[in-house]
Length: 113
Image (cartoon, rainbow, N blue to C red; front, side, top):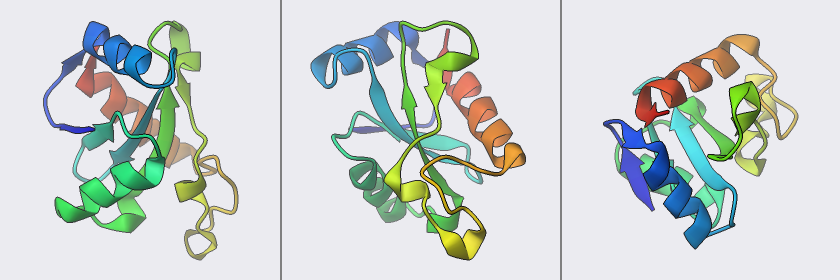
């Protein structure tokens, strides 16, 4: 499990996928700080790593990345850590389109495709 602050190659992300779930990497994105943690077994592990690094929970969102998939479908907005009624997000997805956009922009900047 690592914190990605600088761009990571798609090949490195694919290697993480193969070492873990096969075709997918779990990730938690800090939309405020513009970083993400990848490679954990659970989104909550990555969330904890980012919290220890100084992130605030309300800025953290769990996603799944599929390095072998092209287009927008390579990012899946689905994680138990996303359920937070106090922020108006009652699902495992990311209900706010602006937050989804920030997540996608962060991932795009941090993964060299």
